[in-house]
Length: 247
Length: 385
Image 1 (cartoon, chains in turn yellow, purple):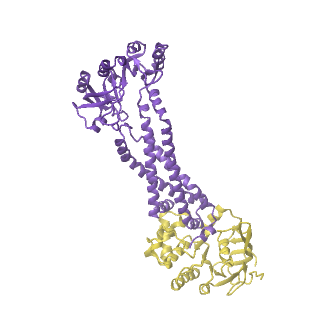
Image 2 (tube, chains in turn yellow, purple):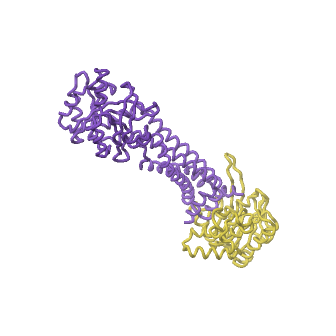
Image 3 (spheres, rainbow over the protein chains, first blue to last red):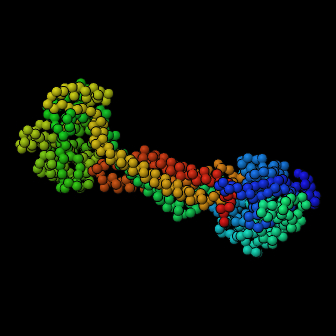
């Protein structure tokens, strides 16, 4: 599929990945992680990237979220080829376009829930009052308005992840990336988080890219893609036909 | 604002570690402050010396005396306002451990030349009228509980025998830098007494104190005095009071250097401790910094966080140490009043404390900051969990 083309459900592509390679250097040893990855993600999709440990799914997520650099290939998010950006430009781009949800929630322990949610807004031009209003709204959306003055250690795992989701959506980013968002949660909490992500996708039209090795979590996504040993090993459910599979 | 909030909360997040580090810095700053005050006290005599006073002594050595007859000759020099003289007596009060400086002086001129020794008119009159009278500094009198009219006996070492004196006055220092631990009695009393026992030792003085009319004449007067006694049996060496006092300090220069080195070693040790704390702290927070970088915060924010935390910890310890320095210095000064009659924490010492803390705080943060900035976000995130 060509850049900017439509996916089968006729949505504009928001992410276009072309011939992406990535390897890590361990001393003199070069460890290849991703090989010639090419695929698109349409706006408003809920994509699950699946694969066993070491398959490169987190690396791929890091690359398309702009927190790691590819060796070769391009990643276009919206109108921007992020592989051409400098570190500083990438930091600005991430602040404006990407919301992050991590396995271990990654909240700042010395900040209250509301302060954690407010943190990315400090990089915007919003006033103090606007920042507070936005943060309260985000916390309300995840059902934690009554816990806004609690520190992360005073919250359960599920609640911490909901705070992390509020932080991820508070800047209204172009894409939401989630790395094993339910990996550290019990089943009930995990279902709540997944349901919340589904709602964000369905009701607010958020584009979500989720890495998981849990098939139950993956079932909440609309599209599944499978990585194995660094190759995109094609589709389990609903994937586009343009994915490359050299294996 | 949030960066500052994180910075302050981080600084005290691990209360035990931060508390122990702050305590360590406080003790180090206290030790540094006391050692610097010891050095300042060593030089207190030099600092308090007047620029319009000269000291004339035997050119061979301070232990050799000069004839009393030099007094008139010195007084006749142009630029000389007043001349006094005295001897180091070296008496012991009850036991050798009760050391304090004691001199016999020509009292009338000596008190004129030293206006910083403030004596009430009635006490001064009583002292001048009594040949066996003596005056003592306020701290010395307080230490031994002497009151006006008390008889005090010193055992002579240079001038053998037991010497009785009557306390006629207690002088106060004009300011904090004046030594209030000295003991002065009449030169005539000593001279007349030894004349009976050993006539050849009579009419000899240990030093002349010369007050010049203007400080800028001091060098010319000193040269003129020494020229007068050139090629005599007792050649003189005349120098400013400051130079004379510095000569004494120079004799213990190695000790002063050692104390200075120890004071800097204390700072280096605590710097290593703080650097270790910051290294541990940064290693623990590498995930937090990775998250902040993920959210779009830059290296400058991370630098502010780590340097700020390091400075908050070191300055808290520094100010605690500085506050503790005052009572510690007071206790130290009281215990060793005869060795360090002027033991005051100077503003320079406090500035050095703050400077040392800033240096510790900044240097301790350099390597952790470099590591936190250089680590990739993905690597930092991998360390979480």
